[in-house]
Length: 340
Image 1 (spheres, rainbow, N blue to C red):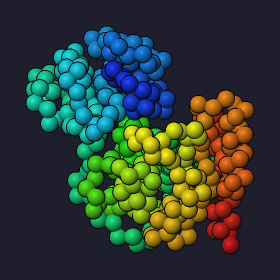
Image 2 (cartoon, rainbow, N blue to C red; image 1 turned 60 degrees about the vertical axis):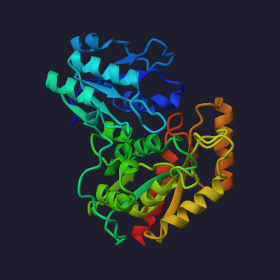
Image 3 (cartoon, rainbow, N blue to C red; image 1 turned 90 degrees about the vertical axis):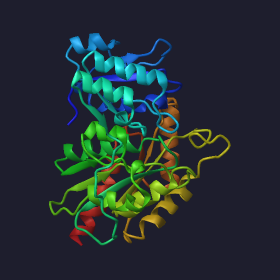
């Protein structure tokens, strides 16, 4: 468990997506967040008090969360300096970047000198199994997407909240750094050796016999040349009974790949279902989740209606509209099938 309250690190972001981890923690675990640290050139905010490291420690913060994302997941020179300053101010440090805090001599020395902890949440647990594809009891839902960062984690968390509000057993299973910070458990799937990705997905969603749902956070996209391998392994290991397709309307190109367009929704959904059938022959789609944050309200509603007409599935923005109708479809499909 990472000690809280947290100070959320924004650094010197270039765009909103670069601080998605800090934003996700602030939105889904606000009770754990005491403030944000922004560099001098930062123009973004999470709406939290802007504190330096000493101020945050004085107010009771215990850990600095490096909630930033960049190409390659590297610690830049300024970030290293900020981490050392945070440790010297009395804060533990947790990071979701690929470059490990503990592997950096300057950071490790500062932590040892202050008798503080470093948490690298992108370090997979040891001894993960190789996937076997054998059927296992329980119900599982996986979110999939047309691209990276289109709302798979938000959709999964919203479904957990909705199903629990209905009195159903449902558990969010984190597969990325932001989700792990929120859930305080999970596996960073994109840091797992390729042969073990499917096994890691099986490991975080083991057999269950309580009629509950494992809601598994999707990663990447089958159509993203950089990350399709992770998405494929997750589909096989999750052995999902149900899929929810996530998409951001109007996105100009695949994230980080100018000139490469996103797939159309029907093709994307069909390919994900096809891949999932290797280990879950009876998988079905139960809904579409759109990130309509860049659209006006009337345009967002119209886009959802058009998507419903196209795919014959309930379509909602999980943040602006909730996921009630998607949850309705999930219950209708699986309560009726169990009764039969």
